[in-house]
Image 1 (cartoon, rainbow over the protein chains, first blue to last red):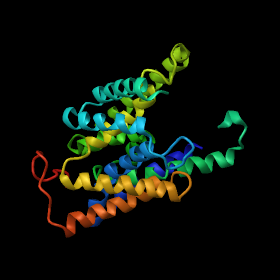
Image 2 (image 1 turned 90 degrees about the vertical axis):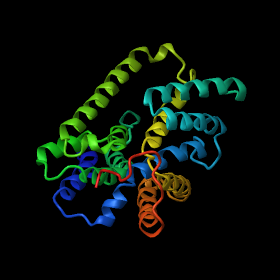
Image 3 (image 1 turned 45 degrees about the vertical axis):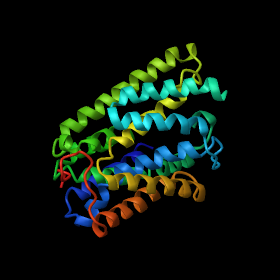
Length: 96
Length: 180
């Protein structure tokens, strides 16, 4: 079990720090943080708990202010607290 | 999963597929650590998580060739997780976990982690492309394949944007990415 979670993390960094990486590949790897995080965030907003495509208005409406706030303030703590407050506040309007 | 009586083999396979994004993250980190010892790299890779990776990548000048900095970051994250888990196990029943905006705490964290990666206009475009493709891939493929597929496709498109199109102006940041 430990090996299955360890090997995919360990082998790439070990080999790639020892090989010469083409510039194109380096450039592509530079986009990995943004693309992986997008792939984590966006489906939360557009899929229901059953895994079907369905806009999640409660999440979507909360996500927009957090996005703008995080853009301006760039604080993880403050963004999480704002997100929770907005989501909580929206609950009184949207139900849940 | 073990408590539900599922046999070990499907769990191991499922874990492997859930973690398909880790090779990409590990490859990305490799750009910043040149020929460090295997022991150092194995410590760093064992502690690789989405959150610590995202924080590390938001300012790569801090981690570049400084494995100890990344390790400190990972340990802080790990410690907070353990403290949080113990706290949750002890006191979790005192509050309703659907109240006080708790369901949106983790999404908020990931939104902020995403936003702090955006440093140029083209990053914003890549985010939009990745967002759309992640929804399409999740719709079309089972499990967690959509994360890996989105990472590969949208990063490829990012390279095309960067090399083929006119370089976009930087967004208030110092010109040049400082990491190459």
